[in-house]
Image (tube, rainbow, N blue to C red; front, side, top):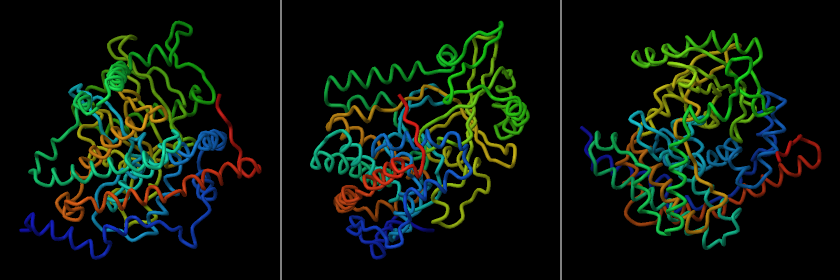
Length: 445
């Protein structure tokens, strides 16, 4: 039997392949692909009428570009040596892919909350993506390089300290580990910021299907319908509506038996196509309105197209053939508790989809409005949450052995994040392509 000491030694041995100080390096490879070409390749099978909206959102700022350019950074990370210490990666662990949501027991949790790109890979790729996003956000917010460095260092340090703590716990203790949203308040030092966080949590608790009912629907001809707000929200056409009704039963079959019984108590009312996120714009995404006991008992589900993860072309084959299954399984593995309506299925033309609740007390931070202190505190929260997710899915003892007690890894990844100014350059390249008419972009008001 492999002992904890053996596992820790395995992690320490990985330092010979990739010394912790080596993570500080960043130099674009000589054959690095043009970032605009990478984005255009991603867009080939997306809804073409929505691509200008995607590019318009990405050119808003370097941080917005980073949100939509997971494929670009994945290729950059893959060009570097890696530790071989594998976890289930989020795959797109930037600051806005963390947030609060409701557990099935109705507790408000803080965790990773986006899994479109989840895939098994080296743990440091998620850490570097998070670190780079903090550095870019700090610059976007007008903070100094010293302040940016402190925020990144805080996040990576929180990751290392959390992994080392979890490495000392038993398997069930790690599995049941969770971050209650209310437990974050004592970590917020500023009284003013603590009040803002409390207000954000209060708003998140109100973000339920009943709240969405009043915001996204209207009465029309005596029936409840989803509003028309093109191009962000458009009624599903007749063929889409027929397909959604047909594939509903396939989705139902991926739920556990007791959840099928619950779902069967709702009836299909209406559906619409919805635009979401930045990197996801152009993917096929719908929302479905269901009614339970009566019209005032709604359930909104989101059906989102799942594609091949951006990491897949750089890593060995993963365990799931179906992209929707990959997303759902990755979310269930990484999150402390997951949406009871998570499921997947295959739709028209063989396209893969996954289903989840549209809003279930979900909320995210206002990164653009954060002070340097706020970004430091929030980065630490994200680093802690990422460590908890990785500890469930990978060998936390080996990773802890690799990281060690010193802050060598923390400082190296922070150096990387500050040197990875590629995001700024790539954002400028996309803006130049828009200016030159190479790609079209629609700016939102």
